[in-house]
Length: 204
Image (cartoon, rainbow, N blue to C red; front, side, top):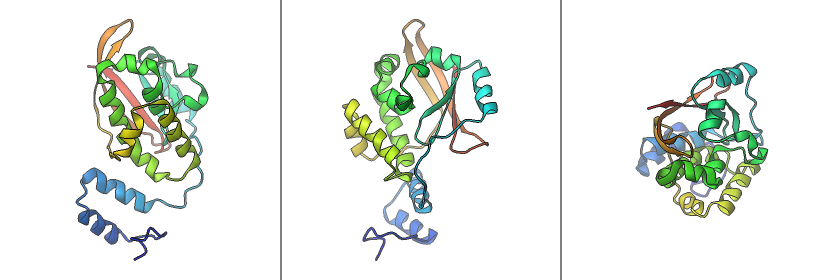
């Protein structure tokens, strides 16, 4: 059949569900398969723009917060996020990406300390669904190439093809001046544009 041969087809929802059951996919993997089947015909990726109202809201929040897009580019952040994590404005625009920062910036490794590897690997699995929806897009391929070149651990994690789903949790940090810190975090989609995701940290 065409699907088995990797040819371009638009499988029915029933076919997708049957394939998922045959592969014994878990809930997260099933959702990823359905999203891939529903995608197609995308235009080349373009970095999103944050509406002024939403940008201003983030900047006024007292707790660390930032907004990312579908490729995980950091599009807006507040002073509290700059103080806790990093001043993303100091990064080259092309490197202003939360996954690239986490995997390649020494500041991130020091900040997360002993939890860095687990957190970085979790983020790679979370990024996989976004990447796969844009498979073949030059912007996503370029980001993956830079991660391969600048993070020795990335290739093995990427080859494992883990699929993650966003959940709230707690991050344990070791700030260079404030010492050990714990923050609860969660992420939310923006009504203005579902491609925009707000990450919010609050002290545990």
